[in-house]
Length: 155
Image (cartoon, rainbow, N blue to C red; front, side, top):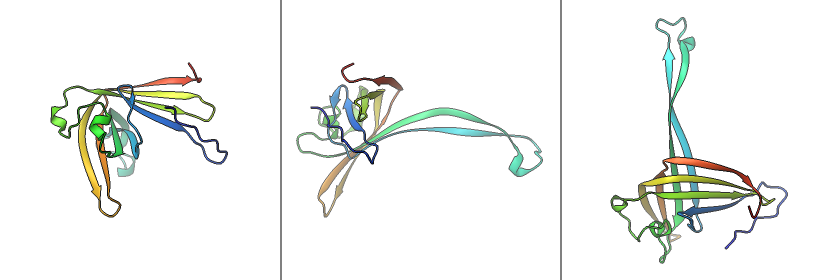
């Protein structure tokens, strides 16, 4: 099944497909990759002015995480959508998965971002009273991220 790309002129629109081990996860409420790294200030001893005492800033290692939010369905809860047996205990997960993000623009060009060897760091379920919605959230830590260049349709 292909996602239709909106044909609009006033808003930049993209078509997203997110896959786990090559299979579409389904409709997501949130897909949130992020990168974070610590920065360390190197200061002069006995610097002239407290505001001017930074000699340089040294970047640390980058930590990548992905948070995925999805409505739970009876037939396919989040863990099953990710390709695992229907379970909610992350301690029994012994194999990483690959997450692929495919972004298509209105011209049909696509960019592929592969988050390789992702390990599940956390799983949570939220049940909202009133709307009676059940949302599951999984946080993953990818080992590597590979971005493919833009490709034309059919390539």
